[in-house]
Amino acid sequence: MKISLLLLLLLPVSAPGQSYADFFTDRTLRVDYHHTGTKGTELFALDKLYDEGPWPGSRTQLLDGLNFGEYMLRVFDAASGRLIYSRGFSSMFNEWHSTDEALAGTMKTFHETVRIPMPKERVQLTISRRDKQMNFRELFSAVIDPANAAAVNRQNRTPLFPSRKFIDNGPPEKKVDLLIVGDGYAKADMEKFREDVKHYTDALFGTSPFKERRKEFNVWMIEVESKESGVDRPMSNEWVENALGTMYDTFGSARYILTEENRTLRDICGQVPYDALAILVNDDRYGGGGIYNLYTTCFTKTDKKGMEWQMDYVFVHELGHSFGGLGDEYYTSSVAYTDFYQAGVEPWEPNLTTQTDRTKLKWRSFVAASTPVPTPWRKEEYDSLETMRAKLDRLAPDYYQKRKPLYDAGQAIITGAQYKNTVGLFEGGGYVSKGVYRPAVDCRMFTLSLVGFDPVCSAAINKVIDTFCK
Image (cartoon, rainbow, N blue to C red):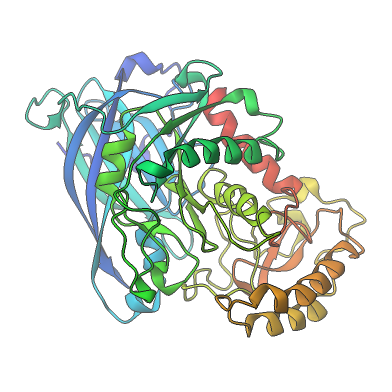
């Protein structure tokens, strides 16, 4: 029985008195599907269903209250039509959808996964995407019957690699369970992986607001062994037998690290409970990536003396994307996207806006009445320095030597800004110089530095943590 879209729109968005045990068991249902399309075309096809062990998520925060993500997963009880679970997320497909390749009409398929509590009875699972007005429109629907023995793979799978709980602060259903896996770590590199896990968790929990919420996290690790060290660099024709298929040069961006091997990744990660996923990449080229409710990637070594701090910057910055739902606040660096943010359309990210009316700002409660909106910050001078920096070859051996005076001059503008410790409306963000604004002159989501998250970004991260722990 398919529930009509009209009926869904008429149903209440929540169920008063609803409890987890009314509709779900204590297990996890992994739903794999294929996501295919090009610009203007988007298709979904159900692949496989798996029983993936105990449910690690909250048993009280079942309906999404954040409104983050390009997509929205909704689960309805088939008998009553009641909405019983929802989560926002983004995907590799929606990023590729904004590339020149997609705009040229190339069709491409990505393998994707959503995970939900195992339902007791038949459910209707839907996936919706935001339209140009940022409203969710349903694109995919499937009825799932967990009682159908042939539908859900319940095979007990032997773990492929050793795992352990690195930080234990309590039961998974009451904590954020962060899983860290490695890619490009050969057998001889495994001790380095263990050291890297400690290093990056120290970096994360040394940064506010994660620092203050450390007790709300468990950290798991899986020692994924690759046959060779390092990961792929397609544009340099350098290929490695790395277990998870992570690669540089994603969408033509040299520093962007993602993997298209979703099934392999999920098969390995499913051996432990997890809410958030980070992939440490055993390679020395600067790079990383982060997609909301998907995963974070980060490089883990460098031969450039004095540049080690950049690894810590990348790890925490990318978790700002994948965990906190934050948008990039920079706008001068080259990216693979075309028109990722549409003019005049309010972004869903909590730290980006096109709104200039202070009474309608999504972060208006943080803005003092005395702060001018928009907020001046010597943008033209900063942009001229970034224009010169953008002309440098990032992969050249002397890149950092040539970049340093430009970087230092830009940092001087930021640290000397009149409103440097103020939440306001600073133009430039989301890869766009004009018409998109950020909350602060500087933030971990803006400059390549170890500066902390601004108050708006910190508040968003805290809200996400609360969805797992309260």
